[in-house]
Amino acid sequence: MRKNFTDPSEIRPWAALWTLVLGFFMILIDTTIVSVANPTIMQSLNTDMTATLWATSAYLLAYAVPLLITGRLGDRFGPRRVYLIGLTVFALSSLACGLSPTIEVLVVARVFQGFGAALMTPQTMSVITRIFAPRERGQAMAVWGITAGVATLVGPILGGFLIDAVGWEWIFFINVPVAVVAFVLALKFVPRLETHAQRLDWLGVVLSAVGMFLVVFGIQEGETFNWGQIWGPISVWLLIGVGLVVLGLFVWWQHVQRGEPLLPLRIFRDRNFSIGTSTIVTVGFAVTSMSMPLMFFFQLVRGLTPTQSALMLVPMAVLSAALARPAGILIDRGDPRRIATAGLLLLAGGMLLYFVMLRPGTPLWLLLIPSAVLGVANAGMWGPLSAITTFNLPLDLAGAGSGVYNTSRQVGAVLGSASITALMTARLAAELGTGDAGGMGGGMGGGQLPPQVQEGFAAAMGQSLLLPVAVIAVGAALTLLFAPRPPRTGPVRVQAGPAENA
Image (cartoon, rainbow, N blue to C red; front, side):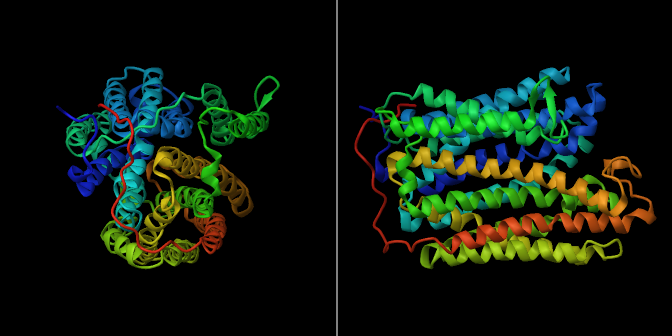
């Protein structure tokens, strides 16, 4: 008689990890790959830039908003089952994206694609938390964390190659065969884990979804509306304010309700979980915000194409991937608190190097040095943070903790994107007397600005990098508050109870 959950002795943790990483890598690539295709999509679908940018905004909104909910769904129905459902939704919506005849159809398909990604993401971290013993979890979390960093860099490179070779539709079509392979591997290697029967907190679902949507939409689209009125009396700041109030009501409801909360507040009693969740906000902010001034500099000052600009970050991607496993071994054998602190400080150092080097006359090969520094920083940052944050997390709260952690990272990314855009505009106005970067000398297509404005433009981009430096410095300071880990533990424990059947 077939058991409805995987026997602990039959679980192959590393096979499961690499299977999950494949799906995780695919969905994260889609957060950045479309940025390279925007001009081509705009021309092909005969639309304008505002509508085209919604193809990215819709994905990010649908990805970020449900993460608190989808993380808890993994605890309730089983992470394997929710992951497979999300993977199916992601694959079908990717096919719909590539077949879209209009921008409206593309935006709707991207919403479903983002929701599929939201279903998948928390399950990857949750499964790692539950199948690796805490003291053996460092290497696994290092691989998981580096995947997040490398995917954001690979997206633009892969996007540029596919657009040039076969057309923009293939940045979506390529997901379909990858998803099929990931689905088959998940059926074979991702274990069926115990579920935790509970009634779904529907009021919590509504409050969290509405609050997150209003806050994320307000921050993400604030620059589009010049941080003013959206429609009639409704302003960007009103949306954000109402969203924060709704989220406050959500937290209050989680505290007072008698049933099983969507977000069990007791997870924040764990000092390392609270500190790690706060720190990942600064990481999401810095990693997202630093790329925009760099891409503007490479394209508008140095005249590189989008693909060439992305290739300038290859040292970061290569070193991040190469050092992931050694960093994981250090996490398991050493003190990940100090590794995380060093990683965040290296990130700040790499961005400061860019600040110094962003000049029109700087040789391109020199600009590969800070990229390499950032690669070492990534290896010492993502894995240690996720490992120590989840170290003491109860197994029945793995999904909820993963949802909170990933939501925090995404909110940090949204804050970083909005903040760096506003700061770049302000610094351009100060240096050049204008905030319209796109209107000078060829815009975003890879053409250079006139020589007389290159120096001021480069200075503005370099100054903008000081913002993520300051934010990541706060993150480094937070890591000093981590508590030490307990002594080495034994093998992973498997709780008794009902299990997922998928």
